[in-house]
Image (cartoon, rainbow, N blue to C red; front, top):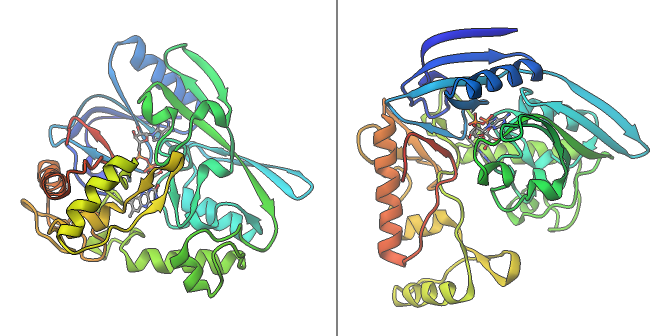
Length: 353
Ligand SMILES: Cc1cc2nc3c(=O)[nH]c(=O)nc-3n(C[C@H](O)[C@H](O)[C@H](O)COP(=O)(O)OP(=O)(O)OC[C@H]3O[C@@H](n4cnc5c(N)ncnc54)[C@H](O)[C@@H]3O)c2cc1C
């Protein structure tokens, strides 16, 4: 079924609670309805925004002068082959509830991704990840509507080109509309090997060891709550889009430059190994060292979370302009202090850093 609303304020559809009106918003309950709305908008030459849970979006105060297709499809189909279980999940399914279900069914592979807001169909877009897991390691296929070719396709993981917080879906922004996502999970009561030291410490295991699925989910949720990373209407620190910046991935030459600046300040640069001999430096650390601590007050009602330096929050009636103002201030400070460019993680609509 399709439900159309004209001139609808988008702030109520995003976790940051900013965004002006859309010309029209259409709710789509099935993949076929979603395709219909997308095709119609494309044929009419209208701007189109596919909206999931709105947890990774910053929409301009001026709004969106086009069609917003809100994904509300439902359904999880399960197919079992021995100890591997394949599930096909409609794009509109709530991600956190899917993780909860998988854990209760003793299906391993997504337990570290508990508490991430939004819908299943958005998880491939930025290859959602947390606590050492990312969806790329369990996705076996993504069924999409290709707006360039005007037809449905099923993409293999290689075609999805997953990498750290990105994929073909993010790079070719808007080309593919995700209809459903296929995951392969392992039927066992224990988690996949824990890959994140903080989580392993909380569980009392070593990195690389396993732990009971439900314990892992509980530990992840507890860690996330402590950082304001689980949506909670009573906690203003969660009025965010999660991490506002990705962790910069530096080559050796960039790292040497950064280390020189850091050692002049008497500090040591934390890092994690990334692909091709490069290193990932925590954006939160760079931000904090550049003078923007937890609770830093930006323009208007925009504030850095009091629990997590990477989250920019709508603390008190902030506008999108306030939030972008704070993001620019932070990115500018990090550039001036360390010569490192920060990249926004959420998708900006009608805005730029
Ligand atoms: C408190 C909090 C914590 C978070 N923690 C994490 C975290 O730990 N790890 C992480 O990776 N992310 C995290 N995020 C970011 C966010 O939750 C994820 O990126 C999530 O997958 C976004 O889902 P959504 O349905 O809300 O997408 P939306 O915000 O609605 O959309 C995001 C983008 O995906 C596009 N899109 C959405 N659905 C589709 C579709 N079906 N087809 C094509 N395009 C689509 C939209 O057009 C938009 O460009 C967090 C956010 C918040 C608010």
